[in-house]
View 1: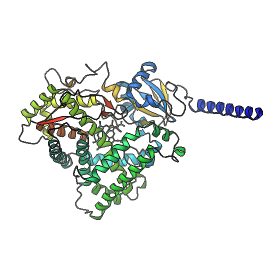
View 2 (view 1 turned 180 degrees about the vertical axis):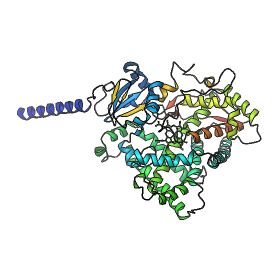
View 3 (view 1 turned 120 degrees about the vertical axis):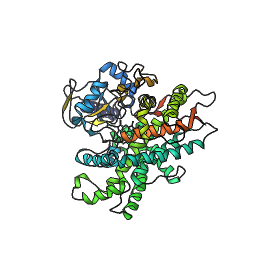
View 4 (view 1 turned 90 degrees about the vertical axis):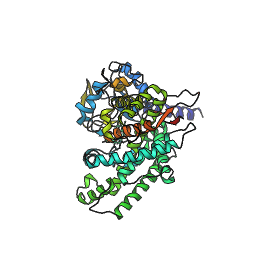
Amino acid sequence: MPVAVDLLDTCLLFLFVFFLIFYLLKNKHPHNFPPGPWGMPLLGNVSNALDHHAIEKVSEKYGEIFSLRVAGEKIVLVVGYELVKEVLLTQGHNFLDRLVSPLCNEVFQRKGISTSNGYRWRRQRHFFDSQLNKFGESKRKQEFYIQQECIFLCDAIEDEMGCPFNPHLIISSAVANVIASLVFGKRFDYEDTDFRNLLHLSAESTLLAGSPLVWLYDAFPSLMKHFEGPHTTILANYSKLLGFLKKQIEKHKKDWDPFNHSDFTDVYIGEIDKRRKDTDAAFTVDNLAHCILDLFETGTGPMTSTLLWSLLLMAKHPEVQKNVQAEIDRVIRKSRRPCLMDRASMPYTEAVLHEIQRVGNVLPLGVPHKAFRDTTLGKYFIPKGTVVVTSLASVLSDKGQWERPQEFYPKHFLDDQGHFRKRELFLPFSAGKRACLGENLARMELFLFFTSLLQHFTFSAPQGVQLNVEAQGASARSPKPFHICVSLR
Ligand code: HEM
C-alpha cells in the first residue's frame, strides 16, 4: 500500500511540474514585449482585461503599454491619446486585423464585416460603406427613415405617460428599426412578437458574452464544446437570428427587380451575380446574412445604450434639458419635425450630445484589433498576431485634457462665444480604417431621436427617486436598468 501511495505522489508531483513548465513556456514573453502582471493559470487576467477601471490601475504600475493574458491569448493594452492614435491612425495599417475568438468564429465563420479580415473584409466593408456613406439620395433616405421612426418612438413614449417606465425596449426597437428599414426596406411594429423575440435573442447573447464561462470556452473550445453553458445559448440564439435573416433575404430574391433596388439587400443580391468569379470577396447569400446580423449587432447595442444615457442624463440634469429645449423651440419650434439641416444652428444641443457620448463611454475598450505584421509600439516589440486593445475610455476622460473629466459638463464642447468646439480627443467611434462603419448614421440618429424626444417631452426622475448613473457591463457600458417619468411639453 505505501508503495502505491508513493507512486501516486510521484505522479502528482510529475504532473504538477509538467504543468508548471508548460504554463511558464506558454506564457514566456518574446524579447522586449510589453510587461504586465502574471494572471491566474487557465483564465489569466480576465477580471482586469474586461474592466477599464481595473486597466487604469494596472497602467499606473506598468505604464501606457502593458500586456495581460486572457483565456490563453496575450493581449497588449494601450492607454492615452498619443498611443491610441498611433495604433489606430499613424500605424493603423499594422493593426488592421481583428481578433476573432473561437466562439465568435463559430457564429460568424470569418464572414460579416467586424469579424472578417484581409481582402474579404475590404470588399464587404467597401460595399456597405458605399451604401451607408454616400451623399445625396442615400443620405435623404436615411434621414427619412429616422424621421419616420421618430414618430413611432414618440407615440410609444406618449403611451407610457403617467407612470415611471423602463425605456429600454422601446428605444432598442426604434434603433433596430432604422437598420431594418435600410437593409430590408421595412420596419416592424414594436409589439410584433417575432421582432421582440429577435431583440431578446440578441440582447441575451450580448449579456452572456461577458460571462467568465465564455472566456473559458474561448480558452478551451474543443473541451468546452462537450458541455452545456452560456456558449450553447449564444450559438442557438445566433442560429435562430441567422435563420430569420435568411428567410427575409430569400423573400427579396424572389421579388428581385433588376431596375428597382429599394434597400441594401436588393443591391447586394445584384452584386452576388456580378462578383460570382471573385470567390475570395465572398459575395454570397450566406455572407449577406452574416453582414446584416453584424449591422444589427454593432448598430443596435451602442446606439441604444447612448440614447438611454441621454434620457438618464437629461432627467438627472434638468437645467441642461431646459437649455436644449429652449434651443429646439428657437430653431425648430413645435410645428415641424427636426431635420439634419438644424444641426448647424444648434451648437448647444450638439455639445450636449457629444458630452453624453463622452460620459456614456459605451465601448470603453473599442473593439480589439490584431497586429497584421511584426511591429514596434513605443519602445516595445509587438509580434504579428498579437491582440491590441485601445482604451478609448482613457482618451475620453484624460485628466490632463478635459477640464472636468469625471463630470457631465457640456461646456467641454463649447467655446467662449457659445459656438460648438470640436475636440480631437472625442473618439467614441474610434478612428482609422477600422473605425465605426456606422458613425454618420449613428450621429444622424442621435440628433434626430434626441431632438424629437425633447421637442415633445420632458424627462424626470420618479418622485423621491435618486437616479443612478452607474454603468453595467464592462466591455460594453450601458446604464443599469432604470425607470423614468415623462410628461408632455
Ligand atoms: C453611438 C453609436 C455607436 C458607437 C459609439 C459605435 C462605436 C464603434 C466602435 C468603437 C467600433 C470599433 C472600431 C475599431 O475597431 O477601431 C465600431 C465598429 C463598427 N461599427 Fe459602430 N458604433 C455605433 C453605431 C453603429 C451603427 C449605427 C452601425 C451600423 C450601421 C455600426 C456599425 C459598425 C461596424 C460594422 C463596425 C465594425 C467595422 C469594421 O470592423 O470594419 N456602428 N463601432
